[in-house]
Image (cartoon, rainbow, N blue to C red; front, side):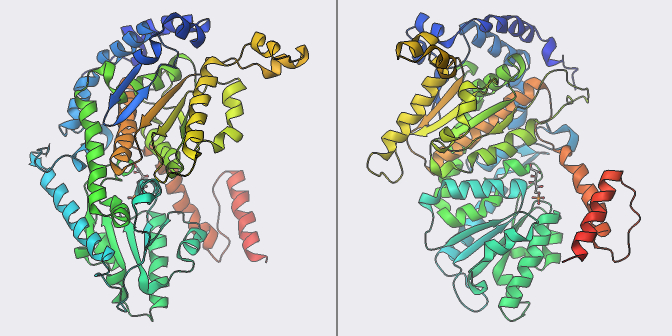
Length: 546
Ligand code: G6Q
């Protein structure tokens, strides 16, 4: 590959570094006062989402330089490489083609000379046929009862997307069915997931790309025992109560699941980019194939927007650049994502994996240590709850925390004045963060002098506001794709691999070594550091004493 200039050696980066200094003095109050059109100017729309990014520390010049940085970083060419199936995940020698999962049926996307779109469509059709049968009560359990409970067993990318999508689209879900999710190897997760359920009416989806993941395989084995215990021990029951989502047919069959009931995907779908693949089977069972297809359409709309919109009007590009702007030029450590929509309560958790597993990297694609900051920490909670807890720090703390507010024009179930109040709050928060309250304003309210500093709001705290008409399956797809491509944009500029996750390996390997040390009857010869050795010994003692 071409030798790429370190990101911070690019002309635009250096210009941004110099330019960022002027923001020490430049307040959003002034930026708005000086430009009556600012609130219209810094907005963009695409795939049903409206982005207001005017309440950011930026001027036309900032935007120009950020866009120049994107161009200097070859963003357009790298996007084309991803969309055309090039193996841009260099460390795993894989294409990165989640966009193929939502491409229209007549599209052509080649991987190693083979069009993958027909295979994607075939899996979707198979998922649809299966979902329809289960939802209609035609797929019967071992004892002839219809399936009323679906439990997805998976972790990481095979869990967070499905849970988030189920919660987000619950309004559209079949309320006659129960959906639960088991991820943690902590047995309590399983115990609670099956609590009160009848095995005869329960279907397990074992979702694991590799079908080797410790947590998932442990939970799947436990689920099989639970089912067989509940159904009298007849092993043929497994076929009616277990299906698999995996790329590993051999392991699926070894577990005892008929590969006819396996839904496949491909190595070019990364775990955290897989909620729109067969990993979304639980989502499809909940909301039905039509809504699932609508979600894919929303993803695709945003893919097309990202691929074709000029950078200055391109939502993922703009959001990616803004995230980078604060991370690298203002030393911001985190970004808060604050959905004013209760159904999106798991969206921040989902985004944590998408953003941090993707861009939590400290070497470039060529393996050189970066000397600039990469992936910020993402976190958040739905509004208005967060307002009564951590917003204090965002408003008056010492740290700069850019916020993404997400809100909708309509509640899915309107209830009196609730929605107006909810939206009033989101607009008020963004306004308060940007403009704050000066000492003079505080004094003018009759506040005694000694109290004034405590009641001052500096303001100048940046935020994006994302609005959509209502939370539909399409809009959820567009929203997820927005963040996927924003993450991509950042990763390209930082010149890191957003698509591997070697950082999760070491702990996994060490745990495998420690498991027998905890379980062996004989006292093990421990060769860890003294802290780890002591902890292991103490745990062994704790196990023995009641
Ligand atoms: C995501 C990661 C990771 C993965 C889980 C589960 O991008 O690869 O979170 O999804 O480790 O892996 P399996 O699906 O193979 O069980």
